[in-house]
Image (cartoon, rainbow, N blue to C red; front, side, top):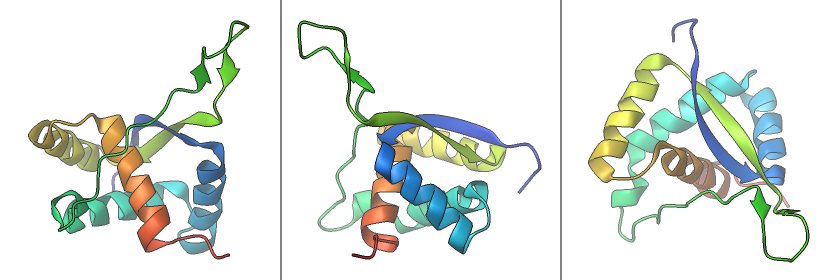
Length: 122
């Protein structure tokens, strides 16, 4: 991986961000290394093409206007997934091919990683 890191902005529940950061430190040393491994394995595994396919997960907004008062927080936070420029380009091409946003692609990869690859221990 090159020293220059780029990022894709997505949103996740705050608890998932805390879990990802802890998992990254324990298993990979850095979040960037874990993101790289996660996204490369997601691209290689192609769970969206499996039978049954993994559904695309669309990130939610950080705020909701459900009430009459000021916007309420949903618990979803912005999460910048750092990665190498070559990986970002590969993901951009795959997103064009699959007709999904990079934010949706990255959040679905996070969902897949946390649910199927490294689920939290109860």
